[in-house]
Image (cartoon, rainbow, N blue to C red):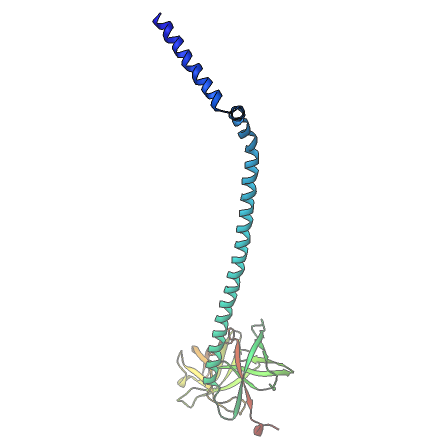
Amino acid sequence: MKRLDFGWTTLMVLALVFLVLVYRVPAASWVTLGLGPVLEVLHAPVRWMQDASLWFEERQQLQQEYAVLKQRLEQQAAIIQRTHSLEEENRQLKALLGIANIEGFNWQATKVLGRSPDTMSQRLLVQAPHARIDDVVVSSEGLVGLVVEAREGYAVVRTILDASLSVPVTLPGSHLAGLVRGQGNELVIDFLPWDEAPKVGDVFVTSGAGGLFPPGIPVARVLRVDPVPGTMYAHVQGSPVAHWQKANWLAIADRRAIDRP
């Protein structure tokens, strides 16, 4: 009997709780509670689409921001490169002032426009509206060559590596006199006696003989000295002092009007 009374008591309590819930909670809420899981399943694809759309929008915005940032970085890199180029050109121009200070000549800076790939006849194209044939061309280090063709706005320069060009030279502090001529990528200094042969590292400068080249311009640095068999002369090889292969600016020596017709 006690067990039966306990069961009836529990049943009555549950019934009472049910009646209270029915009385307190509207019918619509019961429907909502019952359909909640179903609504969650139905809304899931919509949420996924919204999340995917938001992800694509954020990704597109990031790509646009990256493109703008990349463009700015490229512009800054171009500005930095241009600044370095201008600084190097400014350095070259200042250095030209040190060598282009020889009496009897007017010196004008000229910009290099192009270089010949021919190693046996290396020539340059420079911007020089007032150049004339046989004008002397130098870099900040030394002699480059002569103008062989002059047209309106530009000139062609034959460098000292050209085998057809000979430059009278001397060794400072001595009475040596020789001729420098091109031989491939090197220079040869002819007519130097073996007993007075220069040393490796010596620098020959223009002697001024013949009046074509101003005196005192560095031309060739000695690389090797060998005796010429059966003669009293030395075979001297050298390299140009001037490094015009990378120079953007050179200087042209224009003779003064009193020296020209």
